[in-house]
Image (cartoon, rainbow, N blue to C red; front, side):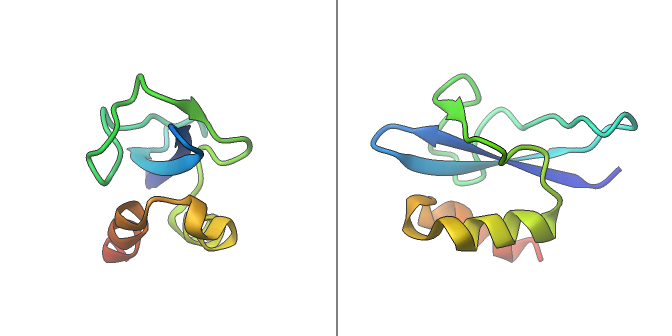
Length: 81
C-alpha cells in the first residue's frame, strides 16, 4: 500500500512527522524516528486526528498547523512529492 504520515507533538509544542506505510486493513505504521531524524518513535505523543494520513492530506495538515510543525519535517515531506 502507499505511504502514511503521522504527526507527533514533542517538547515545547513542536510537531514532528513520521513516515510509514498503510496496511491492507487501512491501519498504518510509523518509522523508528521522525523524517527530520530529531525524535524517536517512543518520544512525545500522537497529535489529535493527525495519524495515518496520505501524502496529500499530510501536506494539507502541515500547512494548516503552520509554524507548529518542524521546518525540517515539512521540507522532507515536500521533498518526497
